[in-house]
Amino acid sequence: MLAVYLFAVPLALILGFLATSPGEVTFMLVGILVFCLALPLILKWHHGLLVIFWSSAFGLFFLPGQPSLWLVLAALSFGVSFLDYVMGRRPFLPAPEMIRPLIFLVLVVLGTAWYRGGVGIKALGGAANGGKNYVYIFAAIFGYFALTAGQIALNKSRRMAGLYFLSGTSFALSNLAYALGPAFYVFYYLVPSDAAIGQAASDFGVNDIDRIQGLGEAGVAAFCFLLVMYGIRGLFNVLKPWRFSFLCLVVGVSFFSGFRSILVLLALIFAFQFYFEGLFRTRMVLVMGGLFTCLFLSVILFSSQMPLSVQRAISFLPVSVDSSVRADAMGSTDWRMQMWSIVWREVPKYFIVGKGYSIDPTEMFLTQEAIKGGILGSYEEALLAGDYHSGPLSILIPFGIFGVLAFLWVLYAGFRVLYSNYQYGDDKLRRINSVILSYYLAYVVSFFFVFGAFNSQLCVFLGAVGLSVSLNGGVQRKPSRAQWTRTSKQPAFAKELGA
Image 1: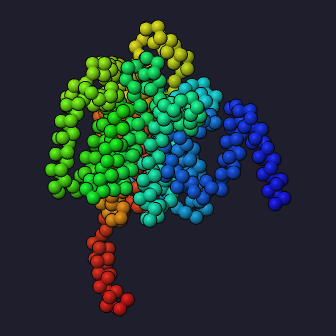
Image 2: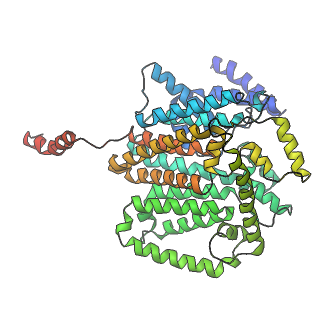
């Protein structure tokens, strides 16, 4: 008790004093103290925390650069897991398909960064911007190994896989905080405010379309959660209609984000899951055909009466939408086309050795001022920052052809791991494995043909593969003929012995 009083009381007084004088240094000190107090919990549950918060929007505002929570957890979990591995306590789960492509990718990224002047992190005192992109790439790779450092128990598999996806609904907290008013802006210490820009632009008259952007990623996360819990068969169970009602609510709410890519992504996930559940051979094909026909007819009849953000999400379909929505959607497409026409001219220049992510702050400032003065197009800032809104260009320009080859190798290896676990994994994990595989393939298609960003989406691909390896205890292989014969004869042999 004496030790408790000597430690806890002074610490409580210090924290109380710091809480009355908030500032950047204060937040950092409080964060360090909270981290020290939480260290025993992190050492015990670091792997589970990483799985749960991998897809979340939470960030740590008191750290330089305000990194995402999953990034910090990935670093901590990898460090703890590597120490356990060195001490011989717990090895990493085997997934040899992923080792060589990831090593190749790391070498390409490091080589490009070294050739283009190093990794500049302005938040840490660097002279250049753009180093944060390198950090997120390496965090995704180290996070993958951290995910494969521990196996999730079979009786917890559905719960952990569900939480992995469900944490993505936290992207909607930014929009919720803005809608509730200034009293709730404290939530922006926990989640970034980027998703609320569309709401603010609408309120201040900058944009006529009130886009609730966080609902897009939150809708995809909730959709995958429902598939993990029930699958397509369970969602369309007529004896439990509330599941289908909740599915309709999730899909409908995601349209308020105004992103056309969200509708495409949801359709891809559903189509792949429909195939992997084997429903294309059943009467469900007719049911789905009739359902989607009725849905499409309803959209055609009532599209012009829907909210503007929903109209924008469906504007690529052959339906009637408001003229302002059509103009906004066409303007976004033209903006991308203009930028891509300029970027493709740069491809020969960076075909062998990529451009990297390093950005001169002075050049960025001059570009922003030129855009304000109307000298340069609005896409020039995105062009300089490497935000090409195109998956292939986001890897080809920064890292050249070798980066493209490395990334394609990683994607192919990840597909092999996921498909092998889906094909030969435990029957109790079959639905979960099919959802992860559908999620992975949908993002691959979207990355190359709809929207992609290598630096921010590498964690999506590696996270899905790492989760599958953790759930299945590695990569499940097709049993050999001898193993199959031995396993099939085991029960009869045991019965003969009277076991």
